[in-house]
Image (cartoon, rainbow, N blue to C red; front, side, top):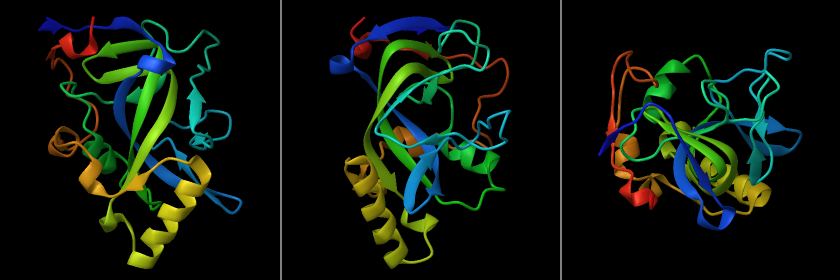
Length: 190
């Protein structure tokens, strides 16, 4: 185990690092699309959409994303890191749009730190819908169909979410200041 401050790793698209993240669902025309749950674009005040299966990070500061010392990049949680995806639901309790978890394959430049990963590029692998986030079974089924049509990835229920994601429940998403983590990087084949 090593104490992680911030470490740069490189992954190819064929050997990507898999992570989980939280999304809110928004409508774009007649489509249902994934959206960042917390980050708001300073120019529009809106959360950025994830309209396609693949995404590339950008930074409003103009440097390549992600970069050292900056919080830019595509966020994801991996087993052993501290960000609480369920905690981000508490942080965004003011939101009324439904939420989903999704598995993403992170590649290119990927920074790992105690909070999770920040990736240069990511591809959706699968989406997990929680029945509790929907008013009816019919609306859940319709959302599942719309998301499969939009992204072409499997859409399942909470049974496909790893236990480490749902067990890391905190009153907020980010870890408390000063909390550290010793992360076993061996599974990352370093």
